Length: 202
Image 1 (spheres, rainbow, N blue to C red):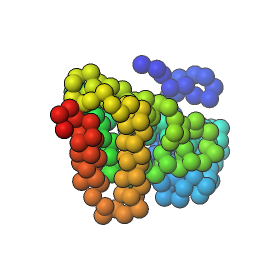
Image 2 (image 1 turned 60 degrees about the vertical axis):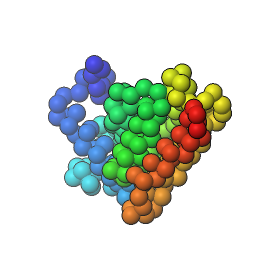
Image 3 (image 1 turned 180 degrees about the vertical axis):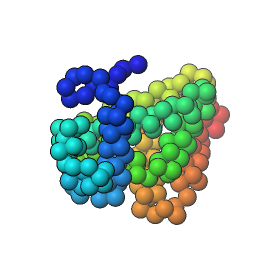
Image 4 (image 1 turned 90 degrees about the vertical axis):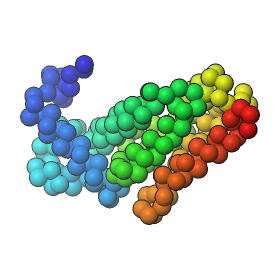
């Protein structure tokens, strides 16, 4: 397991690790509430009840904190969704992916907003909504369902993956705009549409 390194290149003490984790939590909440532009080092310091200089001891810039916060969110999301998908194979794995991803972002709206803000702003985060890795990971699940005999060979997996990602993004955006929106039902609808379009014998 990798050991966190401080700015001086040495392993972080337990106290430093705790402070960095606090700053990351605070940054996620601030970016979710005020957006990237509305989050400053001074605001992060105030929320953490420390000085701006103390924040800079751990992170050299606002963007560095935002990137660390984004990385934490993606790590947690990946662990949750990966854990939901791992027990399944074939079409069931893709269904688990769709349901678990939407459920995670429904239950963690601050994380959803953090992701959107980080990839939309000039924060130095290199991910984007159109990154090849996004459709490739979903296409791999579709290919697995095809190999299992659950889905037909056509249409191309990339095309289907892009469509599925677009549908998921739309559901998450609607959930953020309207907390009363039934995103769980929407996830089921996406799964049903995919099954109707791709399932063998349908």
